[in-house]
Amino acid sequence: MSSFADTNILDPEIFPAEQGPPHRLFDHWRENDPVHWNPANPAYRSRMPDSSGAKSFWVLTRYKDVQDVSMNQELFSSHEAGIVVWAIEGEALERQRANFMMMKPADHAAVKKVIMPPFMPKSLAAISPEVDRMAAEIVGSAARKGNCEFVSEVAARLPIYTFCELMGIPEHLRDQVADYGNALADVESRTEHSLDPMIGLFALAQELAEEKRRNPDDRLLSAMVNDTTLNLDPMQINQFVLVFAMAGHETTRSTAAHFIHLMLKHPDQYALLRSDFDGHIENAIDEVLRYTSTTTNFTRTAMEDTEIGGYPVKKGDNIYLSFAAANRDPAVFEDPHRFDITRANAKRHLAFGTGPHVCIGARLAKMQLRALLKEVVTQMPDIRLAREPEWLRSVWFNAIIRMPVTFTPAHGG
Ligand code: HEM
Image (tube, rainbow, N blue to C red; front, side, top):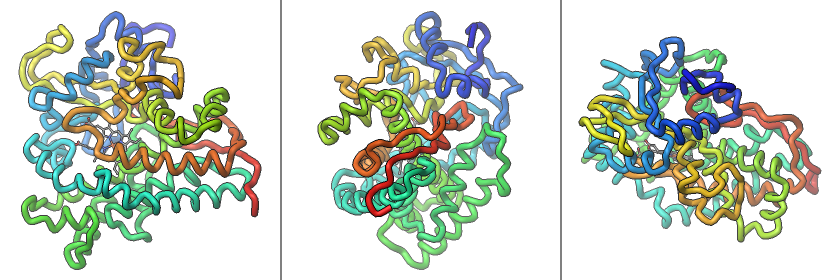
């Protein structure tokens, strides 16, 4: 990117050119135009189901502005026009609003109450030994081979297993649910998918819901389907499965791949981590989340004429919350482009969002990352890249999709 004039943040070439979020562009906007108007460009379309084209929006790059807007869901709505950078209208918008992330504040709060228990520390502590056991098994089977494709063989498997266990999705359907989730996140690539992933996932969700009505169990999907206070309709159930199929594994998987990639690019940091894994891992995970921001943005809509950070914004304007830019704001993070697993305030990052819609899976994601990375560092200590990783072509997710690695085969290989 040589010049920033007229750069549009939805240009699908920007992220691939920068191997992730365009931080030089964000720095420029933060310094010169911190509430930056990004007009819709009809040339930039996506295959996002239900979308009718790009939105126009204000791009927020300052930490405080992203935080303030995220905290105020009455003034800055997730419901009004959805939360993604593509415009969604009419019936399609109604369909999207059945999604928990885009419900009216009162409905969102009611559903959140029902789905929160499995994500609370006590429930997580109960499944922690099983997560550790699965992590050892997944890494162990790859470690014996001496090389593997890290994303599919290591990083993806634990999140898929964990979120399907939590939801109550039977084993034979897990890969299918994960494939649909991946295809739904893959809206800018040129990959052709044989079946519309939304239609496929919704059919599967209905099949599962029927099964949970017939045979209720103690898992999340059954709780949602059979809750008599919520009375969710079929589209709300479909959207609920969709949120978890996307949010439940794609992000955790990408963060695990980024973690190893960053360790290999910063051998001093890897040596430090290995010198005292338990002492450094919590902060290292937060620093990787801050540094990579796998979910780079969501949007909101202003419900009144107002101002953000001193800049006027009109009722109905869309707002792009750049979590990626906020996480590199020098007003909060000293020398923000430096990767430092001992950074004192790494955990202030906004990679999980903040406010009423803050990620409910944050603790679960961290627990899985801790378990998985401990096994990688122990069982594949000399892990190295076999070739440079491949990134997802996306203006939304900062995701590594393929990362071939080699290592000395673990004993028994
Ligand atoms: C490293 C991993 C993860 C990252 C970076 C991440 C990121 C995010 C972000 C930025 C949001 C905020 C949305 C907004 O402001 O509108 C969010 C919300 C959400 N996340 Fe995550 N997430 C991760 C893991 C997970 C996991 C493991 C689950 C569940 C199994 C999950 C489920 C959700 C759900 C249901 C929401 C919606 C919350 C709401 O609207 O109230 N996430 N996530």
